[in-house]
Length: 386
Figure 1: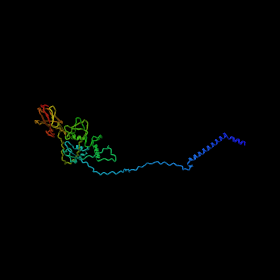
Figure 2 (figure 1 turned 90 degrees about the horizontal axis):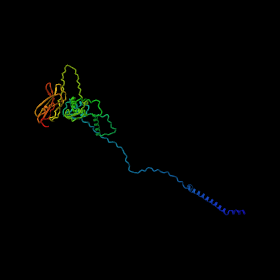
Figure 3 (figure 1 turned 45 degrees about the vertical axis):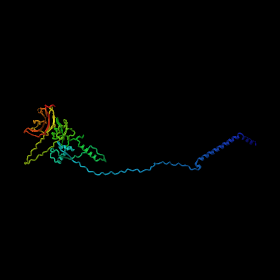
Figure 4 (figure 1 turned 90 degrees about the vertical axis):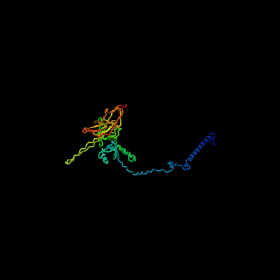
């Protein structure tokens, strides 16, 4: 009994307080554990019996189509077929013969540089001799065929050229083919032509006389040479015609046509045929021009050109007449000019009119032929104040 009382006595006081604290700590620990377990069970959906949410895939939005009117699509249409056009045939070149014209010059002006067409033109116009064409006669010359330039570039495939452009192209190619100033030099001359080398003191008139041609023909054959102030209605360009030539210059001239005479076989009954006599054309008065005026101190020089050669017995005869007094004067020379002597100048105080012409005189028989046209000039008298 005494031990029990001692034990109970020991539980009193501080012992009781410590025991109460221990029991309280145990209770608090149990409560905390219970709360923790309850919290875990409350946060677990499976424990609570709720379904577990699943993630849905995100849909990517596609392009949106806005309704509107339909767009027209391109449909190629066939090209219209052009109606065929008539091909125009070029008409021949028509030229009327003017004073000083030659058949070669007319053919050249129609675009030909090849004189092979000459027999065709003579046959087409019924011309027996090319030198016997008449002033005012109409000459028909076929147009040359256009020659394409081998250096020209061909048009690309599918390119369309209008009728006007095509005509311009063909004309341009034709002009290029016949252009005598083309930079491509022709190694040989065209048929019917030859080169002439200008000699010292030789002028255009002497060359024209030598080859029996005209200033117009030489101008047509040599377009790079300037025939300044030339009147092509005159055979040698008129008194104002100026052509600058230099020594050793090459110019184109008509080549003489070689004549082949077959040797006939003698049969014993041949009739002798007289040989043709060479013709001599009349000299052409060149200067001074008609009605030219000369002062008393000026010298009068008469000039002319010849279209043939003088024979050893021939000379030029100049006939000069003072039409106011009727006095006449003649002189002879083999030159192509004549200086009027001062003794023929009027000595009074008025101006006198003179007429003159030049002819060919055969000194063997005194026959005068081949006279030029008459020219005139006015010479002021020495007694007239100038």
